[in-house]
Length: 341
Image 1 (tube, rainbow, N blue to C red):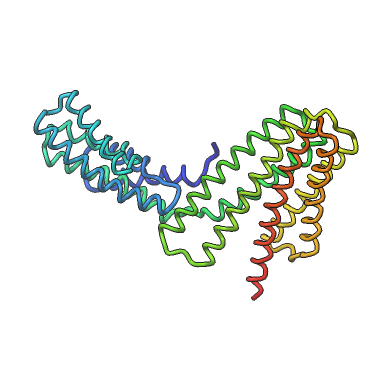
Image 2: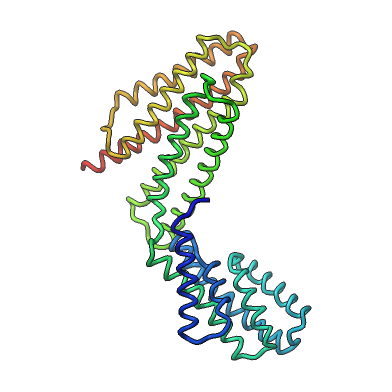
């Protein structure tokens, strides 16, 4: 894990919460600090939703804790039962993320055996921590999911490019290849999580414009293309080297096709960076070569059968990767055309 903005903002939120508690001369500032740590979220929308959810569940938890404290005092069994009840209610309300801070409030309030002044104090401390985290998240280096997503797309593509270019030639050490492949998978999964956050942030926080919705389509297709590229790596690792009919000419053919795929992908990414103009001729030639490559492999499988099935699986994955690149290329060209108009 690397040091990032979220870590810094968490520290700032804790600091702000402690200062506010000190300024208001409240006791037990640690509750506010803990609440601010839990409340730091990856997007503005998540922060806002978390704030609203915590207001509801903390209020409910404080009320139940007061009633429990008045009826059963602060007996350990009573505290445990109230905690279980609060957890069940939070889950029923689909507010599972709020359970941690809500339980802190419950335990703190029940400690006072139902004294409402004490309960109000503990509730205020939790609220101070949550609001502090929200304020810091909005004002200090607010999350920029699109920028982060595009930067990670580029990083992931470069890693995919390296692995695909050395997959069939088998130039990379096997241990290094597998290690890099695992890292690539982690990055793609991370991108998927970022896309969901970005989609949620855009759709929930404001009414999306048509251009914003179109951008989401582009970002989704970028991710899909990377996934298909990873699928090619998987197929090569599982099937290509197990095929018994490979010849030097066949190795060269697959290697050249992989080079064409990654080169086309690279050109598409450069188009999105406004460094290349649309090239219909290149796209048409790529589509034709992609179709011909699969057709040759299917013809070979139809004529030979034995030992070619594994190669057919790899070629099908490569074709699908190429197909997704064609779709991504059309989006890149359309974006360029729309920008000129």
